Image 1 (cartoon, rainbow, N blue to C red):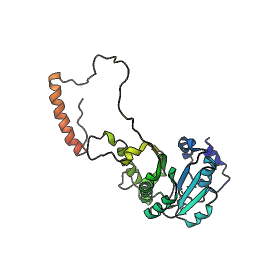
Image 2: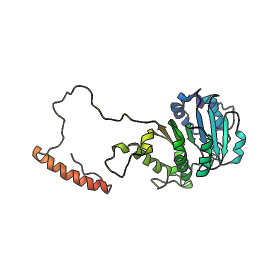
Image 3: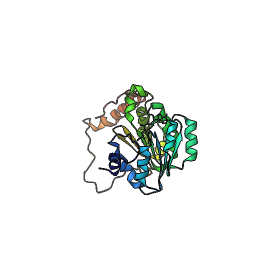
Image 4: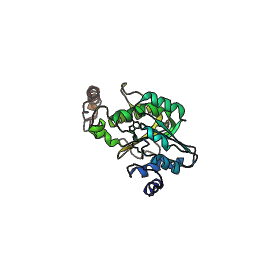
Length: 257
Ligand SMILES: C[S@@+](CC[C@H](N)C(=O)[O-])C[C@H]1O[C@@H](n2cnc3c(N)ncnc32)[C@H](O)[C@@H]1O
């Protein structure tokens, strides 16, 4: 059992509300920060128990920040824990919070979980997470729940929003001008989807060339084409052109082989 889960199961502090399978995932990404001067910001304070858990796990050097719409949560402040009152869907409020918080190592969005809240928080806070930091959005299941603005493949859900980040992650390889390299392409190392949770790992990926090493062991590259060699080049041009048109209209590809 992970240390975080042990803490949760024997919780000596205030109430914590977490999906229990998150604990193993947290440890994968958080272990390297233990005992360091880490900056943690969690949206969604609730009874203050998770902030106490982070303090216990990361240690006395950690600076823990919380955001909650409920003004009562302010009373859960203690040494090493500061709490801001406001809504994660309020851009001005978030800007004001970020002006008072140092660059963030770990951001955990466990707030209201509506689509607008999750997307606004990401748009406003992601740049404030350090270049090698972690951004976590929890309880992605609300992207499928009507009550939260969700729905399968519904426009405007956080899940659909995050699928566009997958494209940005791979924008270096795009042959189409419409998908361009942007700040997300340059700043994200990995998107890790778990049951109910997305972990966005920041980090610059500069070394993404495709290389070959070793000694060739085949006389030629294998081709599955049954066409006579003389027809191969003209057929390739025709299929390539057709596929370009199909791609423009986002229609399925004509199989070449
Ligand atoms: C799931 S609870 C947080 C649980 C807590 N992180 C824990 O692990 O124990 C969600 C919290 O988000 C807060 N919340 C709801 N809407 C919010 C909003 N728009 N902005 C900030 N916090 C919000 C609620 O007041 C509630 O305390």
